[in-house]
Length: 566
Image (cartoon, rainbow, N blue to C red; front, side, top):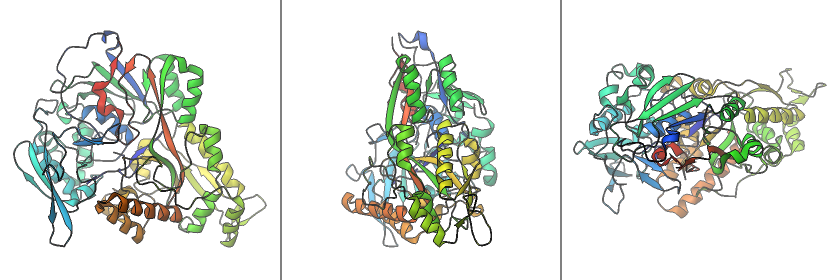
């Protein structure tokens, strides 16, 4: 029952889960480990600043990266892509009796899932993490005015039974193949957040994660937020009530440097110690950096479930025509982009599912670079080339679109220029308009104020694309602009496939449904696939324990494994 959002990321970002995930639980309790005195502090550079730290509002990789050190989700996918407990003591399964399939009145199958919160879990102000927080989080999630990103999760939970202060049962209306995964059920501290929720319609603004982000009661991970300077940096210090293995740093500073050239300069000057792979240098810049400075750093390349693509706003009257979308992708030489910019390390994508994932199929429509066919499609639609090489219709309207991506990312800005040049060759005019990640992901995409938007989805293994492709997930004023289907893609067949995928327990039958979904996506092209990303982790020689996952769970979930070499 993976209620996941796809994370959106500015230098690299969401898959259908569903971008976000987070951390396990336990507390700071001891002295600085021997040998680490020289490196008691760690400074990390990332390319975006979180729009909010509330774990259930908005989906940004930057937020997930920070919360990986300060909050514990119940479940996560580890570096082996296995589901693991962090805040819970044991994963529910049918075998251990903690997951019980039930027959529902409508003839469908549901499931009752029982979880126990770790007995030593505490918020950083010393208040125990209890089922009171579970009940409050459910109350917030069920309120349609709260602005919670993944409302689908809470709609599916029919009820919650509280067994005691640590144990509870979720009554879920679907028995899904990933029923034990509840990454998106991120606990809110009832004793801190209840007052902010007094007026649900204002909760997005009043949440203490926005108004009082250094309040220790907001965090239950190994670290807590001690200083928050919007747009600049977040300082983390150990949680004195963390009961697990202690972190190895007395201070961790996460600095947002949205310009990748400046990010590199800050690393070389020593202002930051490392660049996060999840939100750092794109592959081409990482490869160039390695040639110049590779001997001075550890450089790790990690292919993962990161899908770079261009969302198309299907409310645009021209982009609503599938033949125009096909002409656009045929006009692109994506292989040349991959080879020339990324040394072939980022394979061209045919659909949203990575070849590394279990659901992948190679049996999908594939669009090779074919400018002749692209021109034929546009000619047939009445878009004729003029003397300036650009196409216009019979009314004189120019075939022109606005393309945006996250400002300051040199790699994406270079890709934009290549796309602009390639599309001009088939007579399409492209105007570039970039925005800071917090604006693009926080305002522009949810309100669907764009023509074409280039960014990435970061996903977990076999992540059902409900949040990005189901028609019920189109953001609008009616639903408080939540949901990640920013293209506005509406397909009864895709809705059917998504609904069927979630409840198909047989892996072979599920793989067939995955194949159908990919073929439909490739045929309809609500987004233009570009490539699957590899992340570049640039680490100091003295840092150990950083283990890239290649999925939506950030490395920071295992921050207590990070340490300085003696």
